[in-house]
Amino acid sequence: MATNTEISASKEFIQNDKNGIPLLVAEDIIKIYQTGKIETQALRGVSFKVHAKEKLFLIGASGSGKTTLVNIVAGITKPTSGKVFWKDLSKDITRSSLEEIIKARRTFAGVVFQDSRLLPHLTVKENIELAGFYAKVPPKIVKRRSEFLLRFLEIWDKRNKKENTLSGGEKKRAAIATTLITNPRILIGDEPTGDLDVVTAESILDLFDRINEELGIALCIVTHSQQVATRADRILEISDGIIIGRHGKEVVLRNLDQSRLLEIDRQDRLAIPKEILQSIDNPTHFTASSKDGKIILSPIFDPNIYNNNVQEIITCSVCGKLVKNNARFCDNCGSTITNKRERNE
Ligand SMILES: Nc1ncnc2c1ncn2[C@@H]1O[C@H](COP(=O)(O)OP(=O)(O)O)[C@@H](O)[C@H]1O
Ligand SMILES: [Mg+2]
Image (tube, rainbow, N blue to C red):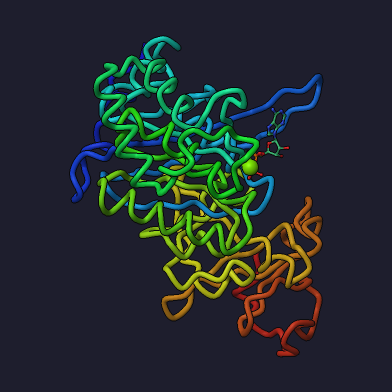
């Protein structure tokens, strides 16, 4: 059972928001995969919210944890720890039964995967109707909605065709129709244009925009595609299983340093982007100081310098680098070491 502290923390996370109660909240999500004796920590405490009608995209390199995150917020897999709230269910779905999740998902979320997942022996129309049937949408509504969706998604002419006669874009449109038949409030996508050529992808992205703007459905999409990322209202960056910051619409995936706004997360962590660490030879230890409103991190390439003999280390008063007590000059900036008061003795 959740403690009072846990409940109040969640309430604050859900409600204390100028945009009202969010549609979907992921809170401190951790996911560890265990394969034999090997543990992979795919998500290391991820938190974010999606508001009604907004387009939130999460970008990240391959292996950063995107698919894992989509499956968790869509209620397909359970996290190792953390919470997921769907506004409609008003509770943490990670503690709900599978039956309860499936029932709530029918009207709450549609999930679009990279592949189309249509049943090959059925026509497009039959695939859409079957999805409506499984979701227990009344037959009359299924008929009306499927006709609307076939036209809205511009596949009316293809309604009696089977998957093997459709183009990649048509398959995708049909797959989207099967998720929209329940009239969900949010569409969750895992690299939804990953299997399409650039031109087809563009037409599907236009469609996502129309689904958002004309049908009022929120989008939560994970991607590592430049083409997709620029369509977002809000972009969060995931790296090695944590959200390290956000980007504006001008994001360039090949040069994320340019647009990244680093963010301290709910665990008070501030991750240093990999590219920045690589550019200074991947140090693992730093000294930290502040000057003129800026934080200065100075890499220490030999952390053993601290072992047992801290007294033998002093700080250079000019550049802040650590140097040996008996040094006469700083080997970083060349200044003369004079200030005895700075010695850590
Ligand atoms: N079922 C699984 N079992 C073990 N490890 C997994 C499994 N699924 C994903 N992983 C690992 O978790 C990490 C994140 O994977 P994933 O969520 O697929 O990332 P992305 O979608 O960003 O490529 C990777 O290191 C991946 O190898
Ligand atoms: Mg993936």
